[in-house]
Image 1: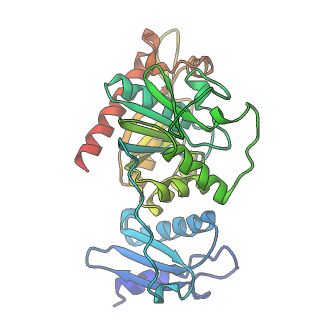
Image 2: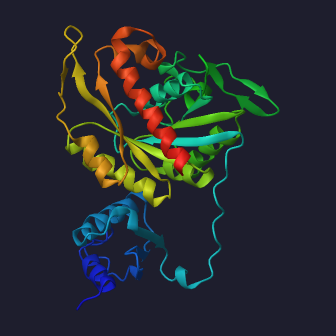
Image 3: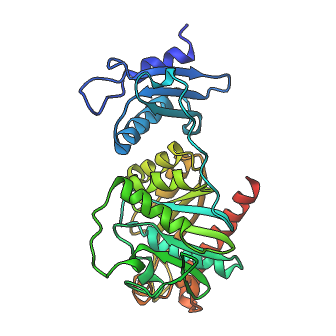
Length: 353
C-alpha cells in the first residue's frame, strides 16, 4: 500500500515549474518531502523564483493535496536554492516587535476594487470608538488613499522629533501614509530594496507611541510590500477582504496563501459589499451574489468575521474624509453594527492566541 509521503510525491508530479514546461519532480525541484504523525506535510523546493511564482506553486500544491484531505494549515512549502538545504545556512532573524504597539493587524486582498482601504479605515475607527488606542498605516506605496479617506489628501506638514516623524492624529486615530511625504499625483515606480526601505521607515522611523492596534493597509496582490512587512516586524494576524461573488474567491485565496507562506496567521475574512441597502425601504439585495466570504473562510480554516453591507453613501463618506464608523447618522447603523461585530471577533481571537 502506498504511504502518505509517496502519495504526496506522486501528486507533486502534477505541479508545473513556471519557468519550464515540465513538472517540479521531473525538474528535480523537490528536495525533500516529510509527512509527520499528524499528517503535517513539509515540502522543500529548490526553486529561486519571484514571489508571484512561489505563490503560484504553493497555491497549486495546496489545491492538489486537498484531494487527499490534507488541509491548508497542515501544508508547509519552503523554497531554497538547490543544494542550499545541505549547508548549515544562517537562520534569519525573527521579525521585531514594534515598540509600544500591542497588536499589528494587516489588511489584504487578492486584487483591487474590493474596498480593502475602506475596510481598513472603518475598522481602525471602529476600534477607536470601542476604546482602543489605534493607528493606521497606509502601506500601499503605489496608490496611497488612506489620507483622503480620513480627511487629509496629499502632502502633509509632518512634525519631526529626535529624527523621527510624528504621524498625524485624525479624530483620535494616528495616521501615516506615504502620500503625506510626496506631492499629490507623483507616481512611485519602485520595487525590491526601495520598497523594503520605505516600509521599514514607515514602521520604525515613526513615533507611534502606545497603541492597542496598528492597522496596516496593504497593496492589493502578493508583492514586495507584503514580504517586506513580514520580514520587518512581528504581525499578529491578517484580515482578508473579499466580495460575495464566488469568482472573487480565486483572487482572495492567493492573498490568504501568501499570508500563510510568510507565517502571518489569517484571523478571518471580511465580506465587503455583501448586500445593497435600499435608502428608501431599508431592504437588503445581494447584488453581487452570495457566499464568497463563507467560501474563503472555509478555505483558510478561519472564520467569517463579518459582512459589510453596501450603502450608496459609503463612497461619498470616503470622498468627504469622514469614515462611516465615525458618524452618528442613523442610516449608517447597519454598517456600524457590522464593524462592531468584527471588532468583537478580532478581540476574542487575539486574546485566545
